[in-house]
Image 1 (cartoon, rainbow, N blue to C red):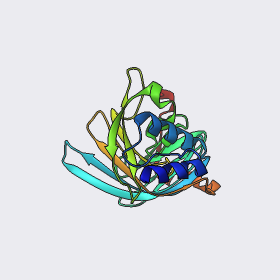
Image 2 (cartoon, rainbow, N blue to C red):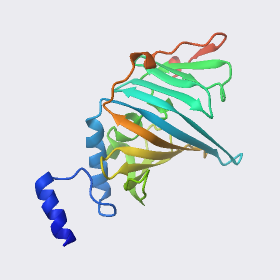
Image 3 (cartoon, helix red, strand yellow):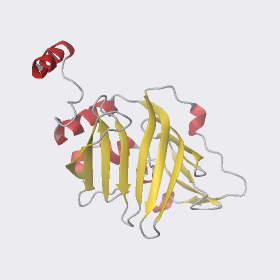
Length: 224
C-alpha cells in the first residue's frame, strides 16, 4: 500500500527533488543539491557556528546573520558570541575578526572563496565531483527535516579550506542545512543554518564594509 501511494503521488507531482530518508543514493543527493542551488540567486538567513580546537581542548559558539547575492557578494555579520564581519562587495573581501586578529582587517579579492565560511557555491557545489571524493555520511534530521549527509575529501591538486567536510542536504528541498569542515590544523567548524530564505530580497548596504577607526588594513591580495 505504501509503494502504491508513493507511485500515485509521483505520477501526479512528477519526479521529487529528493527521495525519502534512507532511500537516496550519493549521486542523487549531489545532483539534487546542485540543481536546487542553481535556482538560488540570493539567500539570507541566520546561522550558528561552533569552532572546536582539539589542540587546546576549547570550543566556542557564535551566532549571526548572513546575506548572499551570487556570485561574489556576501555579508556575514556576527551578533552573539563573537565580534566582526566578513563582507564581500563583489570586488573586495573584507575579513574583520577582532577576536582572532585584533586591531586589523584583512583585505582580499572577492574571488578568494577560501575565507568565506558560508559560501555554499565555492565550498561545496561548484563542480563537486571533479574536486572531491564523495562518500555517503548516512542520514540525520536537521531541525526536524530528514537529511542525507555527504563526506567530501579534496582530490589531489584541489585547493580547499578544509581537508574533510560533511554536508547535510535536506530531503525536502535539497538545500544544505548544516555542514562541518575540518582544517589541516585539526580545527573543526560546524555551521548550522538556523534560517534559510532562498531568493529573498537582500540589502545593498549589507555588502558595504566600513573600516573601523584605528584599525590597520592588511592587504593580502598580492599573495593570492
